[in-house]
Length: 431
Image 1 (cartoon, rainbow, N blue to C red):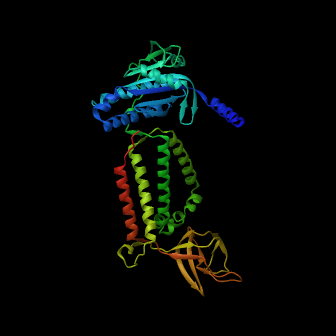
Image 2 (image 1 turned 45 degrees about the vertical axis):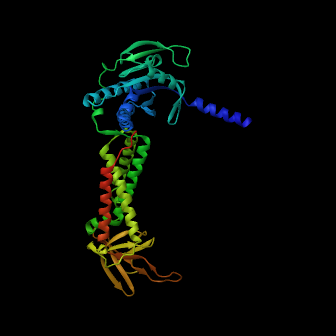
C-alpha cells in the first residue's frame, strides 16, 4: 500500500509539472457522413486524405502541432492563441481557394477553438480544455470559426481579428454557460499567399526520420561506390591521384571542404527538422535512391558468392586503368626514399591506403613499388618484407589494375532500373 501511494504521489507530481496553457483547435468536415454514403469508402477516404494534406501544413506553418485525427476531424494544439486563430483563418482560406480552383471540391469545414490549462505530454494533450474545444466545434457550422471567450480574451491585439459575439451555451457535463464568438475570416487579409499553390506535401516527424534514414543509407552506398569504383576512374593520373584516391587527402589538403560540409550538413539537418512540407519529386528521388542502394548492395555481395568462370561473358573486362594501384596491407608500413630497406624512411602509412604506381623494380629477392607522394614527389614501398629475427616475412603491399567488368555494368544497370521503378511507382500513404 505504501509503495502504491509513493507511485501515485510521483505520478501526480509529474502530471502537475506537465500542465501548460495551450489553445486547442478542432476541425470537422460538414456532412461527411452523406459524402461517404453517396460516394463509397474509397472516395470518402480520398476526400479525408485531401482534407488532411491541405490542412496539416497550415497547422505547421503557424507553429501548431497536429495531435491526432479522429475520423475526418483534426485536433491541433498551439502555444499561442493568436497563432491558433491565424491557423483557423488560413484553414478556411485554404479550403475556399481549393473550392475556387476545383468545382468538384465541395468540402466545407467547421472549426472550434478554446484556450486553457492542459496536461501536455509527448504526442498528446489531456484535460477538460479538449472536451470544451470539441463542444465549441460542434456548435459551429460549415465555413465558420467559433472560439470561446477564454481564447478571445487571450488575444493581445483585439483589432487584429474581427470577432462577433454569438451567444452562450452550456457544454455537455458543465453547470456554467460558455460565451462564444465567431471570427469573420472572409474579411481577413490573406494569410496563405502562395502557400496553398505549392505542390509540396506535408511531412511529419515519423516520415522525416524515415526519409532521413533513406538518405543516410543512400549516402553510405554512394561512399561504397566511391571506394570500389569512382576513385579509380578519376585518379588514373599522377596529377590528381594523390587528391582523390584517399578521402583523407581531401580532408587534409582542403580543410575548408570538410568544415564546409559539416556546417552544410548541420544546417540541412536543422532545416529538415523544421520543415513541414516537401516537394513530391524530392520524396520520390530519396525513395528511389534508397531502393537503388539496397538493390546495388544486395546484388554486389550476392555476386561475390556466385562461382564465376573467368571466361564467361559477364566476367570480361570492359575497361581497365592505365596505371597500377598500390594498396598498403600492413599498419605502419614504411615508405622509403630509395628502393632499399637501409634507405631513408620518408613516412609511415596505415593499412588500406592507396597509391598510384609509377614504377616497379626487383632488387635481389625484394620487389619494390614506386608510388606518388605529391607533386613530383615519389617514394618506394616493398612488396614483401624479408623475415627477421623472430619476425616472419610479411606482405606489405600489393599492386593491381582496376578492371571494370560486364558484371559491374549489370549491377549498375539493375540498380538504375530499380531506381526508375521506385521513382515512378512511389506512392504517398493516406494521412
